[in-house]
Image (cartoon, rainbow, N blue to C red):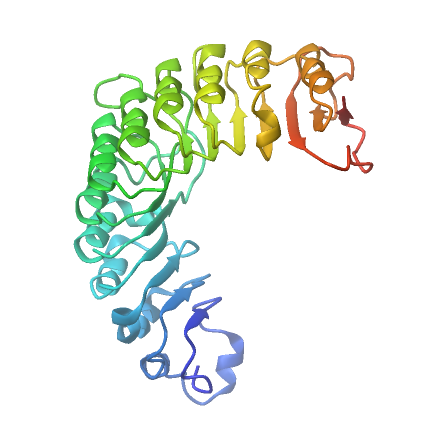
Length: 345
């Protein structure tokens, strides 16, 4: 850093004492080194972080437009002195170790925020959630220029999601990952249909959506009706019947990438998209209810579509139930390097 004071983007790597430092007579002066980098606008890395080193970044916070703490298990108290000076911040990635309190501090300062990603320290479904609807609500109320959000949590409410749809109408990317299967609004016990419905209805620029939590076919009806610009959709543990997927395939003309897992969609839903598959980049379905016969029907009807059926290593090849379906368009035909667990129809 001393040799490159005009650096603009820095990934720090390990932010802790190293054995090589011990060869010197004195500890490196990180505070001065950071202070001299007046052009620094993007800071990331912070692996193996030592909290005592964090004050070194204080001098450059005022100029930062991008800050990535997604590898740093820091607390709200450690974050506050940093984030309180980041008034120009537009991109912020962080672990949920900062809890709702940390997100409230972000909301209070970062009025120019465009992108927020909150990753889980512990991604297990039975882990204790560290952030909730409280943090999401705070961000939506104060960061109204937000365009993209990825938010992992254990609990959420429709009210918080609806508030975000109204407060942040410029959202183009909304990915809410409620970890765990079929989790409803934890206050009312209702499905999360109205929350996601509000997102696709009120956020007119929405192009990417990831849905989770307890969702019925009503949520997919909303997506089909209002998600006219949605090009990438990710679905997990959601829906009631084939109608859910039908709503999407028949109502989202810009859909290019569709990823679905552990949802009750079968052959009827799959065949409802025949008119659209040539316009898509790919469709991925795993642990759904599609059969080999249904996949074969698609393969016969659409010659330029590559239809791959993927089974687990211990699954019989002739089993009619399809574990994973991967379909994509191709002008050159099927690939010739498929492993044995892949059957191209």
